[in-house]
Length: 423
Image (cartoon, rainbow, N blue to C red):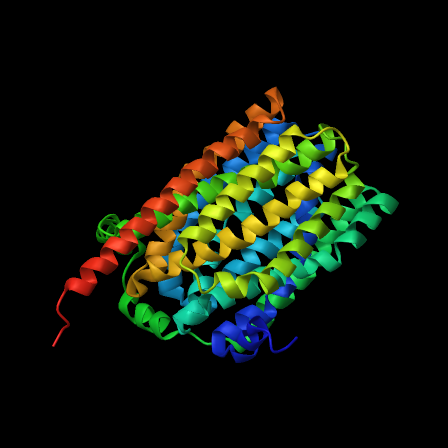
C-alpha cells in the first residue's frame, strides 16, 4: 500500500508543504462533519430558503473586500503570520458564534466574520506552494482534499448523534469541537512553517508602503491578468465552479430532505458515501489523471457533474440507490475538477505577483458568484429543482471554457517551439 504514488509523494513532502498537508486533517475533519447540516441547521431556527440564500450572498459580498485585501495583507504581514492571525479570526471565532446561534442575526454575523477566510486562503496557499516543486502540485492538492475526506469515517457518528440528541444540540457540539480542533491546528501549523522566499521579498518590498499605495498598484496587476489568456480562461473556470459549488453546497440538503423526503439523520450516509468515493477515486484514478493534460479530465468532470444533477432532480422520493449514484458521479467529478483547477491557478499565475493576482482572481469569483446564493434561493422557493438546472447550464459553460483554454495552451506551446532558443 505504501508503495502507491500518493503515499510516496506524502513521504517526500518537505518544509512548508509537509506542515500544511500533515496538519490539514485538523481543519478538514471538523469542517466536513458539520458541513452537510449547515443549511438544515438554519432551517431548524425558522429561517426561510431566501434568508439562507441572502446570508450566503451577504457573506460573499464581504468576501469581495477580503479577497481584494488578501494579496496586500499577505505581502505586508508575510505568509506565515497572516495565516495564523486570519485563520483564528475567520474560523475560530465564527464556530463559537454558530455554536450558540439563536436566529438570523447570529448566522449573518458569523457569515460576515467567516468571510475573512479569503485572506488566509491566499496566504496559506502561498505558504504551501511557493517553495515547492511544481511537479508535486497535484499530489499536494490531492492530499489536501484527502485530509478533509477523512471525516467520512466519522460522518456516521454525526448521523447517530443527530438521531439521538436531535439536530440543534448535535450541531452545537460539532461547532464547539471544530473550534478546539481548528484553533489547535492553526497554532501547530505556525510552529512548523517558515516564511517563504517570495514572502520575505514581498515583505521587504512593501515595508513602509501604505495600503492605499499598494491598492493603486493593482492597476498594473489587472493589466497583467488581461494580457494572459490562460489566466483569463482559468478565471472563467473558477467562476463556473464557484457558482455551482455554492448552489450545490447550500441547496442539496434542502432538496434531499424536503423534496425527496430523506430524513435529516440520513444525510450523513451520503456525506460518508461522497467522501469514501472521493478517497477511493484519489488513490485509484488520480495517479493516472495526474499524468494527463487538463482538458480531457475536466471535460469528463463537467459532464459527470451535469449527469449527477440530472439524476438528482428526476429521481422519485426516498430513492436511496439512485441518490447514491448521483453522489458517486458528483464525488468523482469534484475530485477531478478541484485538483485540476487548483493546479491551473498555480501554473498560470506570475509567481512574483502570486498573492495579488490570486487575490484578484478570488475577488472576481466572489463578485460573479455572490448573487447566485440569493438567485438560487428564490429559484428554490419556486421549485426545488431549479437551482440544479441552473448548475447544469453552468457546467456546459465550464466545458466550453476548458476546451478554449486547451486550444490557447496548444497555440502558445506551438509558438514557443518555433521561437529560437535564447543564447
